[in-house]
Image (tube, rainbow, N blue to C red; front, side, top):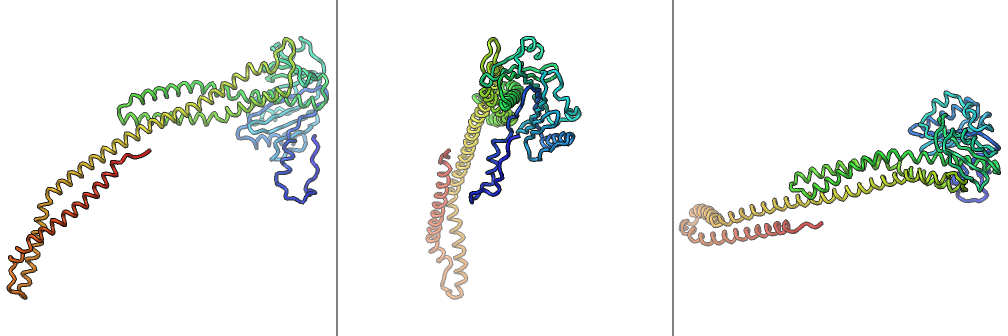
Length: 445
């Protein structure tokens, strides 16, 4: 167990302490490497989490209860505990949990490392198993026959690591027991170095397989990309041959559906592809930490992974980039077609406004035609009103003659009505010109 930090509840400095200060200090000491003395057998498996994080924690608590050992807190993300016959190291990460069982046994791959674990507990493990590997630490360099037997005749990769203090062998394959196998020969490592090597080898295996989870997704998306690219090419060809506004609307609908499909694919795969790149970076980092020195005639870990793993990750990156490129291309095509539709609508609106303008001009001409008649009619009614008024005044002024008054008023009334109608016509015509002038101005974009 790693030493605990001293009590800092009452710091010597009288300063305001950040609430995360202690957590920040302890963060770099989380998940320490194991300290492994001598030869041992280690079983490691990785379980992919879905929505069962709390269920998995309860499963770990159940194992602790069966062996009467302290259980982890609900907020804990790791547990390092000696269970008597074995040591358990449990670590919970964002996407997966690791279980490592360390048993001190000198015979590689001869016995079931998980024999101490209740079978029903293993069978009811929440999540999905991704990694299962047995690692044996020995202190004697094996001969070819032992390597052949332990790895069941499969071709192995190997290297001297830890500055030549250890030699490691693995086939990167599953064996008859359903586990992968790693053999580490401890030449001159101490217990801490031995533990760090075991941890790095397990991390290398875990991140290698977790990164490859994206490869089937990339292959499936590769087929889908071909279909989408073909559809986009056909739509671009159709745009260049458009003749009808109805066709424009149909193409815009097709492009919208295609864009929705691509965005859905990006949403479904973005996390998986980003995780693959991150896991692959961790694989390269662990390879650098191993500091491999080649064994003559044997393929090294780096050589194997760069030839087999890296191309798969590049495929994932390529598919991710193609999805992003398709999204941009569809967006450009949609913008181009939408602009064309908007221009067509503006042209249609302009034609409609021009037609309305022509009808207004015709109405004005009709008004001008009847303007003279309007002057006569209005003048007639005004003179009639004057005549009625004069008839009423005859009781006071008997000498007034309605005919004489109307005869005198006739030219004056007609002149005033004509001037009034002309002014009204001039005002209406001015407003009409202002409105049509605004409509004729081109709209800016």
